[in-house]
Structures are given as structure tokens and as C-alpha cells.
Length: 155
Length: 155
DNA sequence: ACCCTAATCTTGAGCCATTCAAGATTAGGG
DNA sequence: CCCTAATCTTGAATGGCTCAAGATTAGGGT
Image 1 (cartoon, chains in turn blue, orange, red, brown):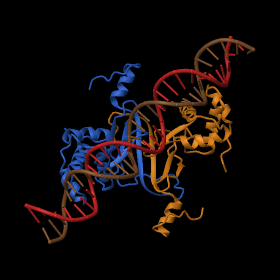
Image 2 (cartoon, each protein chain N blue to C red):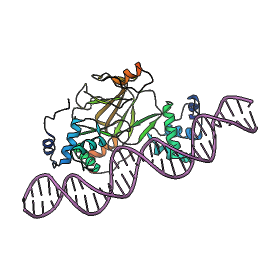
Image 3 (cartoon, protein in one colour):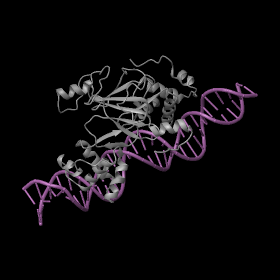
Image 4 (cartoon, rainbow over the protein chains, first blue to last red):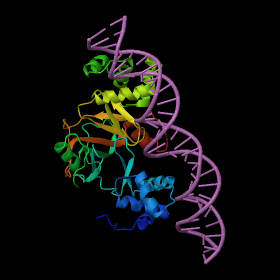
């Protein structure tokens, strides 16, 4: 069920005009297989393939890949930055207030900025980011069936 | 031009069922006169009235006032949390990518959640936060008239 | 295939925003 | 005016991220 990249990470990195390093390939692979991963989660994944990667290398790779447009960086409230490979479709996110689950939502309009504010105060707007907050199916079910509990219920 | 509170901070705090302390009044006053202030900015403002406030007191006050619904906490990208007194009108924000200026935008719809995602993945959504990103009038003008410059131009 | 050099990575320190913990102060009901 | 829990002060600690210096390495040139 994990996404099988249409184009291998190495090709994407090379196509972006960047040097192809094991660290970059591993970082891009990690985000591809696990979207919405934090830098710490990426470090954990990458360490499986490259036991000696430094966290700094992970931050550098994430930064460079983001600038190159191969990754998109999003932050939910004050939490750590999350990374994903869907970069140019202007999609939005659903975030569970309870468990932190992040799910993509396609943008109904499509191209950015998909919304226009009621008044722009002179701003030249290029993007409208939307974050839907609430409870995911599991947390909502758990909350209604067992009011005071931390159980997660069945999958 | 600074907002003159309709109801003094002290009354609001008391009405919320909280103890009225100098620190809380000063913190609420600070956010009222300077919306979108960070904890550090609030500490700076509060220090003018209470030279010996601790930063911890500021964090405590901001936290309690937020839980009580007297303040709303928003975070722009990875920056420090910003606080504002408009709490229940579901308004949104314009953020300048260049200078960080944050401006309120009324929500065209009104009540939260003002938007519905194209598919909710089972989520029970209670809020849709919108962040419009771009350049403020000043930065946009500076960018188009003097391509490589940091000047701010006239007000 | 081998150099060479800038780009990248490793190591390790440092910074900022925020939180934790323990003891002193204080608001406000009785 | 007391009393006690809520709040504040002080000081240390954490997490996420960035800075800096030196070692390694990708990949164009020969």
C-alpha cells in the first residue's frame, strides 16, 4: 500500500539539477513512503538505510529538496515541520486535534491561490493555505462511545 | 489609533471566572493594544508596566487567557505563537512572506467552519483556518520599483 | 580512469521558544 | 484579618532547528 514512486528519487533529484547523494535519495524515499513525516521521523527512516546519517544532513537535504520543489514543508500549529512530496497541486490538510493525524484533501478549485480574501489590504496574494481542524474518524468514534478514555478502538 | 477596549481587561478576566492579577491585566492589555504579538513582544510590553514580570508568568497568563477564550493563539509557519483578542469571529489572516506582517481578514462566510473540504475522510470538522500568503503592499511596491533593495519606502 | 574543487556531510556547539519544578507571593472567600 | 489554593518567581531543562569548522565526495574536466 505504500506509494511506489513513478520516478525513482535519484532521477528526480538529478532532474532538479542537484547532486545525487545517498543521503538525499534516502531522505526523498523516506518522505515518499511516509508523507507528513517530521525531520525526526525522516531521520529515523533514513537511519535504517544509512546507519550513520547525521541529523544535520537530514535537515540540509529536506531544506534543499524543499527549495528545489521536490518537497513541500508544512507546519501544523507549533509542532515540528512536516514534509510531503505532493508539491504543486495546492492541496490542503485535515488535522485531528486529538491524535494529530494529518490527511490530504484535494483543493476543490485547483490552482493557487484557490481563495480570495474579502479584502486584501493591498497584499499581492499567491497562495491560500487551508487547515481543517477537528477529530478523525477513530477519535470521534472513541469520544462518543467512551467519553472519558484514551483507547483507540479497532483499526 | 490603538484599539480602546470597550470593556477593560480586568472586567473581562473577572467575567471569565479567573483571578484578577496585575500580570494578567497587563498581558491582556498588551495583546489588546498590539494584536499578533508574540510571547516575547508581550513580555516586552508588560515589562514597561511591571518591570519584574517573569517570562513564565507571561506564558502562564497567555495560556490561561487562551483557554478561557479571551485570547486566540495562532502560529504562522514555524515562528513563535502570536496572540490576538478577536476570538470568536472566525476571521483569517494575510501574511507577508517578506516582512512577516500579519493582517486580519474577515471571514466571508462567518461561522466556523466556514469551508467544507471536498471529502472529509470521516473527520468531524469544527474549524477551517485560512492563511493567505503573499506580499504586503509595501514589500510588493519595494520589490517592483527597486528589485534588489531592502528599503521600506514611505508609509 | 584519475584529478580537482565546490558541494555536501559529520561532528559538536549554540539558539530560541517553550515547558518543567520547587518554593515564595497573593487574590479573594470566609 | 486569615487561610489556602491559585498564581508568580527563579532557575533549570527540553525539543526543534541552525551555525560553524573540518572531512568527505559527486561529478565535470582531462
